[in-house]
Amino acid sequence: MNVIISNEQQTVLAGLDIDIIKSLNGQFDVDELINMFSNFYFGRMILDLTAIKDYHDIRNLQKLSTALEVDKIILLLPANDPECQSPNFLSQIISLGIYNFTTNLDGVKYLFEHPNTYRDVAHIHQLGQMGGTIGGVDGETRHGLTILGVKNVTEHAGATSLIYMLKKELESVHGLSVLAIELNKRDFQYYNQKGMISISPEQLPAELLKHKDVDIILVDLNDSNQEDTCADVIYLIEPSTIRLNKLMRRDMRIFEKLKGKKIVLNQSLLTKTDIADFEFESKSKVFFNIPPLNDRSKNNVLSTLLGKLGIIASGVSEDNDKAGGGFFGLFRR
Image (cartoon, rainbow, N blue to C red; front, side, top):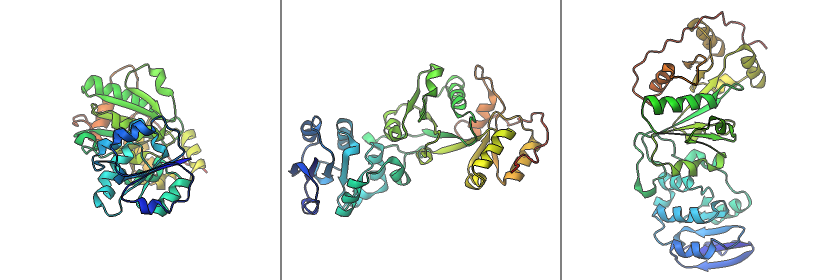
């Protein structure tokens, strides 16, 4: 059974043909709604945004999102209010985990049967902007915050270990506060380190909103499609023959898809000549080359990478010219 809370759009919602267990009309303080529904079972809540007092204040929706199951809420936005349809406002409600919102009855009907996930609204989410505003809650601006995503392209390319080492480098060498997040896995638990958490992709926007006191957030994207959540993403390739040939067998067009993205060779023993061959054969550009690293020690090469990404001040030259053989013939069909 479902709940309808209406105000200015009562007439619109009157055309909704669903089973209703409770219906309210008027304008309510958000605490009133929480008291009424925090322990009230319902299938879906159709909520006319204008039914909330001071609905332009995102803090009221934040209160609601912490007390009720937001995945059950369908928010009907006022069609004649540009502020409530602005990219900034929509980004704020997405950050609260509210993915189901619309401005008309047809939209409500559709979302009732086909609720959104984060993937459906990620394209309008302005969460990952460097030096920008995250969520806008309490009017706070996160100047200098970086959200860096790391994604394996070849199997076992080392995203988890790289994030662990980047976190240590940023904290111990550069004195920055860092949060590391992994999606769809639980590998971080083996490092026994604070500030490394494992969540589902759907939890990511709300989790990012919680951490207002860190300088850098590193996200192990794994097999999720959350790149739009990050300000920048590096794509890891472990350039051994077997890994690359497996990759090409799996997706012959992978390097077309990676065109214009930051390709990082990880655990790589390639020379500069080898890298040039790789770029020629794959018709791609390598952003950075990381040799095998000792995760128990300081690694200057990581500071070089962070400088090239613009996360820290750059002051170390990149020179990872390791001994190695030729590279032609690697992409055998």
